Image 1 (cartoon, rainbow, N blue to C red):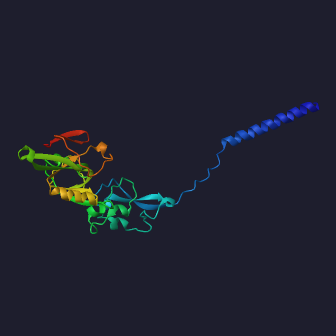
Image 2 (cartoon, rainbow, N blue to C red):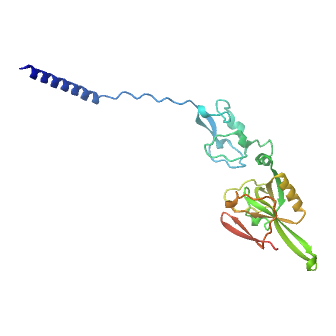
Image 3 (cartoon, rainbow, N blue to C red):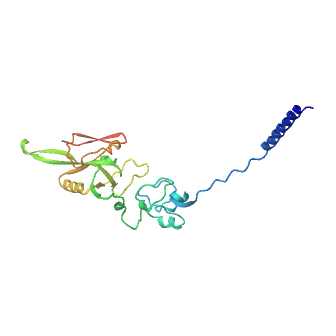
Length: 262
């Protein structure tokens, strides 16, 4: 056997040995994966379900939930710092709604035995002012808490140019005003689409409250319900506008017609 054949045979045997080794290695188990590092967590208090405005919080409305410790700010209630928080918060009233899973923040709650609920939900600089309403002056009961309305003043005056005959005039004195409550109901109950009450509580700025107080002595006040689509319309509050013979009251696309004589 010459030297060339010996070299070729040696190379072939070496390649076969390497292939056999690799084949055996592929049948073996893979090396275990590196364990994933777990982020440190803490338990914070969250809403178990939706909590609506004005709802009295109960223990079953709350639960502890794991939360990344790095993102748990001081505004959140942790179990490590306040293990009895569910018992302490129970009975508080929600001054703003919570959605399921949202962390509980005490800034959005008011104690039932503390400041009044109405004072708690009023934005800074606003006043809660009530005015009497009837089904005729309150859109037939279709005005509900959190709706927006225009306030209309109607008054009867004598016209000397027409032999002293009475002339009825109407004007919008306040526009895009939020209704805080009807009677003492500060929220719309489930399934309720009408609420006939005797008093509507409105959210007003101080100067608007003065306008309403003066107008109450001048004639009859009526509330015209605004469409939900024009709530954000920018208007000049307190600017008088002449009202035609018909006022269309629209809520969620359903029109109700109230008549106002000129």
